[in-house]
Image (cartoon, rainbow, N blue to C red; front, side, top):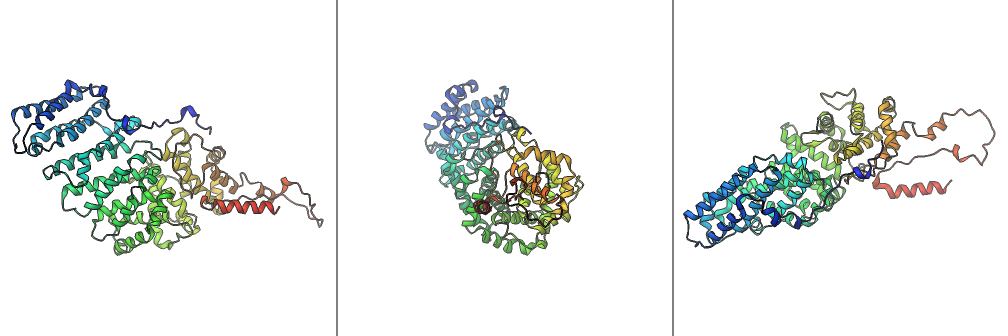
Length: 551
């Protein structure tokens, strides 16, 4: 397959925070001078005394006019223009209206807060997910612009419990709305590795809020806020390339502390395990978790929560057991990860079922997991022969359309062979992981014939063996996986498709007692391919050098 030309590569625009606020020119697009109405209301409120608890006629008229103008927004043509106006109005509402301290009773009045309700009513008419999916640059813009809202003084006060008590419920609703914007937009952003660098401080404040309020589940508003923040971190950590920046927020340390607490709700601990799993998918994340005693903390969680419920097949415990195994697999070196196969059977069944169901789905997902995720875990686990053979020969899967489990992996590789053209980072990760697991399979003689009999597979492997991925989307790949070209070459070598050493073995040599000449042609020498994990790269280079010196 030819590499995608450079002019076809995805261009990821980097936008500074300062560029994301609406410019005066953009604000002038607001219908019927909505900014002026908001400014008028601001001036009216400034003149009120703290004792005022009623909304007078002028205030009421101004509020109704603002609501009316907001309700007119759907007549605009572009949904993005409507949402721009909604976010600009929300910023003004927070920064210039709710922040006024001279009339708390007016601001806490339901009639006044109908302004925000009008914003939400208009927003729900928009399909934000579709807007972001069809305009990735706009999703990026909304993502950063929403973090600008998080940085507003009143929101900062809210996170530090310094807001007026009468605004508690209202501020919770506003804050969760902003977090939802961040979560929704981030699902469609193609991130670069340093994209969160300027947001570390804001994200740390979110983590600290959760830490202070994680046990206030009896207070509905706080519980909703905590869940919203944690679910947003699930989405962000799922973008593996962002994990190094997220580590700087101390997220990994806090989450490990939270799952160590016995009085924390199981639902929050489930979300925490999801975050830990996402962090562990990055080598730097795994390193940070290990430095924080992550393996022992996760094992303690298993003893305290999972082991007493080992026979509980409730969906929650089934999911927690899966997360536990995946986290442990990612935090330990392959040689250390040798749990008893009997105890791993159920997990291996789950992983293989995720591969089957995810691979057969339209969006390559199953139960929230992209198909690349279980394959990456299996790639690491299957360095153990017993585990590999269980997965390929005995694992319990249903509704598999492929004729065998090996064929399932082969069909998936063929499905993702166009990953370069798709410019999709998850498709490319899937392709990389599939090449690596097929490489592991190709080391076992009993599976070689099935691999060699798949002509389409061999053609694909040969076509990608020399493709070094110049056009690939910037993505993260674990040090425990080799590149597609290296894995492809390794597979061909193991299948005798690109292995001159095995060719030499098949040559018939006449019987003779003569000594072979010492100056034997170098092309007839036995050649050796050294396969290694990237983690052992330095040692293996030294080993190869030593072999060459001994020629």
